[in-house]
Length: 124
Figure (tube, rainbow, N blue to C red):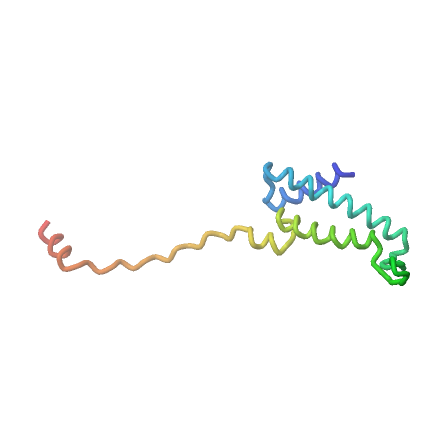
């Protein structure tokens, strides 16, 4: 599963023109987080998409709190967004690094020659 995810990430980066061998370690971390997120998604679905559960604290009060799976998924979403920014895998960051075409320089008008240069050119 991870090798397929990594191949997809690398292929996407190559397609966008942002892949470099130097990024392999970052790609591995990103792919690991993607694999974890997919596993958590499956568990979350199996739980019936349960976001909260009851929790009794030391004082005996019962409160609702987020489930550990949902909390982990929230943290992973933030980390995945950060890594996708670093690897230029989302539209926002890709637009920043996309190299615009080099603007064509305007032709400059010839500057008028000084009287000294005009005089020297007339004598030669």
